[in-house]
Amino acid sequence: MAVGVRPAPATGTVKRAGSASRNPWLARLESPLAAYYLILGATVALVVIGLVMVLSSSSLESLKETKLHSSYLFFTKQALFAGIGVPLAWAASRVPPTAWRRGSWFLLLGSLGLLATVPFIGVSVNGNQNWIVVGGLTVQPSEFAKFALLVWAATVLSAKQSLLHSVPHVLVPVVPVAAVMLLLVLIGHDLGTAMIIMAIVFGVLFVGGAPLRAFALVTAGGLGAVALLVVTSPNRVGRISAWFTGEGDYEGLAWQSTHGWFALATGGWWGVGLGASKEKWFWLPEAHNDFIFAIIGEELGLPGTIAVLGLFALLGVGLMRLVAVTDDLFVKIATGGVLLWIVGQALVNIGAVLGMLPIVGLPLPLVSSGGSALLMTMIALGMVLGFARRVPGAPAALTARAGVVRRSLAVLPLRAGAAVTRHRSASRGGPR
Image (tube, rainbow, N blue to C red; front, side, top):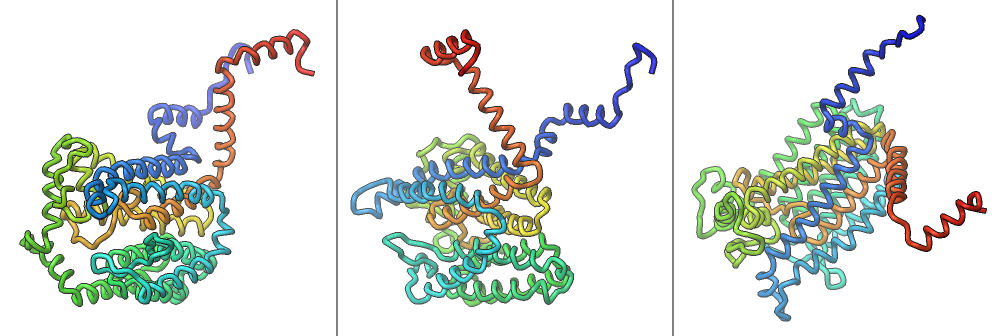
């Protein structure tokens, strides 16, 4: 090579560098830690928003329901479960996938046992017998069942990886076990939870690569079960008929949906201000639960609703990113189940509030009041955060990030004593 002549840079290197400089956000999404930070950031933000909005939307209902004249009953319970959920989610993030697989059968049997107690000792709320009382706290076993089902189904399907082209191997035993779980849930007349269980089954089968014939059979069975449950309930028939025709009983079955629209309309562009909702003054039923999105729109306006939608979108992107980058089929299937559970339930809830879907009684994940739902959702997201920490390249990236933090702290000014000690050490030729 002639002296003074520089070699031409590799074309591929220049192209990648230019592409990254033109699309810095796309380059960030290609990071091994992209899924981890998207899931973590969206989860924390939604939990914080939920605590604030539960306090705002439930203060009057809490004052009415308690004998102690406290406006903080529902908020205190929600904050308690959130406080319990943080260490449990952290612990779940440290559990390796192999441990989840080993414990999946125990989770499934435990959830089925809890569900089996509901017809005998369950408590009825708004026509649904879906709760039990444990130590003075109301617990919803079906929330635990959702999590147990997706972990167990992911374990079974990943173990059958070479047999998933066969419809019988795909459907058995996942679909029969899910059908038993559905039956126990439907005994309590909880259509919303039943639909989410069906969505979880659909999600794990889809990510697992089930044949289209299996989807057709599962879809037909699910639609048949939903139709049977609807036609046997005059209340559900009335709600769905009102949604289809647009001619609801505004003093009866359509009262809740109508006042949800009133709340969104009153909020307008910028909202009436945090805590200033009028619909929460006993006009809108379940303002702190199923219809908390309407209160967000009334108090925080369009920016508040868009922020919540955007956070669920970021959570969905993070979960899809994790499904795409992991090499472990169990992780793929379990993450797909969590995606269909949380993001799917959010879309159904928001669609019902907006009038795009009929009301089926589903809360908004991480935001609505409900301790069992919040706790199990945080544990499920803690599990997938643990998956995201173990994708190829993520452990090294996390170690490098920790080094960056330590180096950043090193530039902070030292205390006087520490500075003198370092100066003496340097003058003596270093530490002994």
